[in-house]
Length: 337
Image (cartoon, rainbow, N blue to C red; front, side):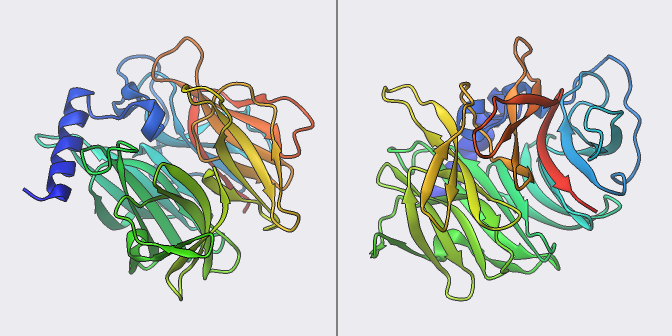
């Protein structure tokens, strides 16, 4: 049995033991998020997400709508949500397409990344080698990226392996980031324990940012699709998200001085190379989303309720404390038209 096959078998076994979902810490999914809850008030459903400016998310409200894609108006995030009949474990949307990462439960648990059109119809599906984690779409909807995490024995130092792909919106696979050249501090890294995740696209479709990890360290890296290179620009940064104006990158950063990890939100000014740690005191394990150039959105577990979560907002300059933005929601994406 090959190392990759052992990883897949281990991931499937773990999914079965956990009810088909991963632990929150590494994979950013609570174990009970994987299954749709029974009972409670039924959610309204439609085949496609609502039109117009909106915030799309995965609903964690108890009942028939648990785990389904929903949305609220961008101008009224506390207003009535519109629900679809589309189940996703992670979702990201633009005005024309969506990416839906899904755990498919049957006689054998499988994992998939699905490209949906604006009506929610699947136009392309890719099998994943493990539990889904992150996905992003470029602002012009021409590129998509998706990451799955696979538990196993391959990399003892970090205790997980990743698979991250970039594809065009027509379904053409543009490559696994493991096949890109990784350059750290000017030196090419050739070690076997390389992992990549958390892609975010710039306005230039050739340029993207991601997380690279090797040797027990993580880096924010700048990717070049044409050259197939990944170049480090800052250490200790994970799950980046670039601002709409392209001037800053937000990411999660371990600020703990002990063995217990504590993820804070950091914002890097690219032109000044200046990092700001935001005043979110709870540990945050998510890939943040920009609501605007001045505000970030991110998910946190709902206090006191297993399997639930809320979306919070915080000013990107750290001037104000976080605020509750959407209750019982996860994996937000902002659609501006």
